[in-house]
Image (cartoon, rainbow, N blue to C red):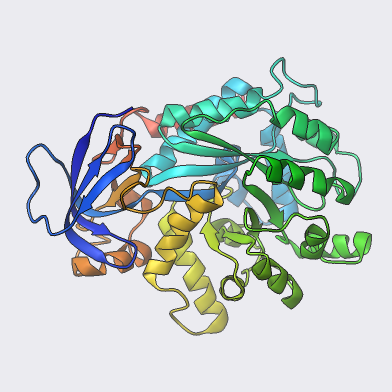
Length: 447
């Protein structure tokens, strides 16, 4: 519980426009009690947030341990598949303690970037070699506790990862990802319990990593628990080709056949789709999480985000491999990628891109009560400076455009979660030295 408090927002994005002088009251339950506009000066006792305040950002797709790959995987050339080999080496060095330390630092970096909620696509479940820890959910619990220690919310998307590819047994470095069967996965995940800051969701790593006959088991668990269900989908053409060879259909069609698609499901990447795939995803209101900075870093390609949204697929954003952690860059990149492909401008308004980074991302993570500055919503918000070298100059009423097309994560000044100030004046209140925490936790994985 938090004390009742009032924040005075110099400028606030209210979903459709920027409003000057907004008083936002936070109740003791950590929700917004009132939003009053036209408040020209701060009320007595109010906390003053100078700049543009937005709803907290939602990072809908994260692999926290990939943060340890930053820059290291930029040496030389290669493909997604050579990048994956290096990723496996890092994964082998993780323990519950080292993963907590790394994830705490990564989630603190997210808070500094204005992110108040992360969808952690979690598949490093067991000890190297595949033996369960004494607590079979030790790794997932480490992530949940890391989010609490960093002051942000998490949806732990516990991931079924059972195969090296279309029924092949896991490779040695994949053994710690696998529960053996989807039934064993469901039994383990059932022991995870939600908390105030943490929801439990499900994920299918990919159609290559979960045999077709076991897809429905994961989908059924998500349905029974009314939980979000995410899946890597058609990130690589090689996956599409292998799925066609094994099943005579695309990955999207295979997921549809086994009841995976639907409004609580989000396909991550959705890069290489047929017209029929797009119609299936849109027609079932299956979401799409675009991760443009990772998709370009891994040379995956540009997904058909415009066509997916037009077909009925809600869009969200994620930083995925954490080549950078910057949701403004993800939103900007989605639009600019489409401009490069189509050679036309303005596929989304700044408001629409911010919605993907806020309300629609939170909804994809099972929190439709977040991502809006309105009474009853979670009091999660972030403030972006309008006077930095990147953001100074434009009229404040163009704050949405400034945030999306000029600002970076470095312009975040404040982050509030549940009415609690987590980042104040660019400093994290719970993790005093985030750069050192990152450096030390990453160095420990090299030892």
